[in-house]
Image 1 (spheres, rainbow, N blue to C red):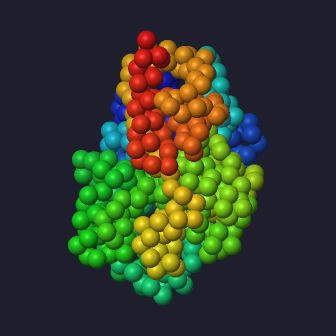
Image 2: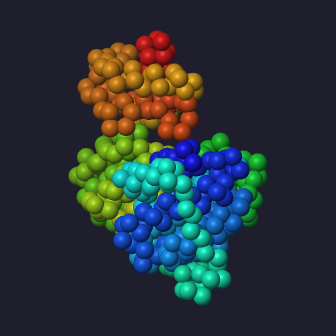
Image 3: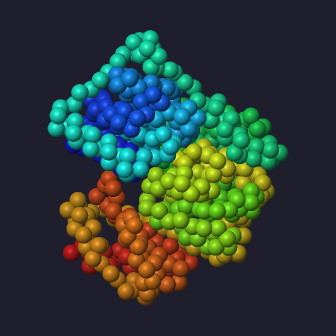
Length: 478
């Protein structure tokens, strides 16, 4: 039990090693106690699951524990994406949801994510309370309360739900469906064997689009690959887009909360560029204004464009829970992170790859241009920035030592560039002259450091990354 820890987005572990039925029951009991202590028992809870090995069985165990604690469960009858589960929390007004998913992790992993009543990733104050309950259970000996499904249904504590139609109707209200209908493009959808199977296909087909699919069936082994919409995993999508002269290809990760895009020329589009395009689109096409929230690791192209359009940027630590907080409390109209998650005003404050894909298609249909042309137009207005990330593996001991050293490091220059500001809201972010910056951040789950850098040219970015690596090797890893 001591190994159960919430990361930036729940708890994930290897099936049959740490992710066992016993541990799933244990953490569910802790969440149940939290809900009871929070006075939300009567609101019930949603339980959803992805396409991974034993997902339905784990969901049944989670349900049995909640029912044993007198909490009604709205159990998804079919595989359901994380953002759809979050939307269902909002629609039904439940105490929250438990989503069984390991997102884009390898096939031998599974995970459990708690989504509180506000339909966004749990904030640290929530996960801290659940962790404290787990610790007390360890001291006193865990008492797991369970109820079988037959008894739960007799008592009105178990209801099966299919939220797909409600979610798609909601999606149609926040996406400009008329502009998509007018163009009726050819789109390739790649759910990557994940929970998003059928969602975009149904939505786009109803709008008259010609929809082709890749990896659109359940495979708990994910075809021997990862359910990750990063460029290195999207060659099958690229080939199908080019072969069929499609407008665009969109890929969803394992629980459909993140997006990757291949345009009609075969070019890959990641989150930093997508967020830049979306900010411009939402302001110019919809007239939206207010706040845009981005994480500390996300491109400053958003800052340049926000200044151009007269909107405000809020910077948060890494983790969509902090983006969701800005959307909930400050009505941010766009929130996103470089790892691929985003959401918009009027939707749930949870990252959603299905929404992002639909919005990307709306944007292309409205503009009648390639995304590269749209980005070039933005560069002409505000200038270009080029971002990158490299990962440096190390030992756990070295990782711990470097974290301590970083707290005391106060550089005045990095390479030939003067340091303007140092931020420590999450890792160490060094803001430099000439619109350059870098971020050194330790992974929360692996023995490695992530080095982010951004600069007005690719050559400057590469020099900056090399300077950071040289500095780390010389000054911090000793």
